Length: 150
Image (cartoon, rainbow, N blue to C red; front, side, top):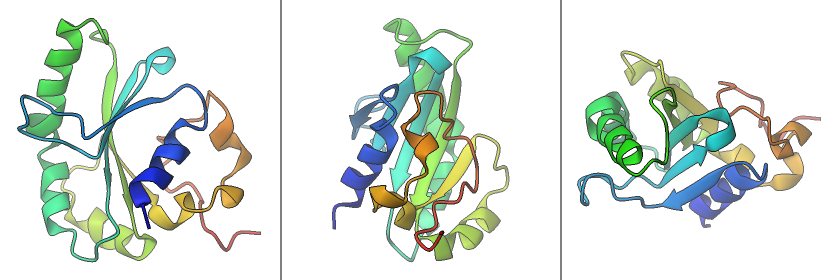
């Protein structure tokens, strides 16, 4: 299954999110699965997707988000006039729902990090209607994307 394609569809269905896959931050130093921008909302997201059970390396990358991604990305985007200094930079992590609790326990500072159930992005017919709205916020931590919801 192509999890990244499912997440890409989920991210862009609102029509106001633009993504780049495997965006090279600082000359190949780091290539997250996606970098997404939402110009109207002045937001930038670094996005990682994983169906793996062992998420230790990913948790470490997210812990290092400021030096690994944000600092270099802000510098590049400001120099290319892609963003303004007031933009926010956050991380969206799409992982298996049974690993969300473990992943959360490994984050010393979870500001700027939003975890999503990977399972919920795989089936568009379970997406809440709001996800299609250009005003939808990905920062709704813990948003119910449970495939079992009624």
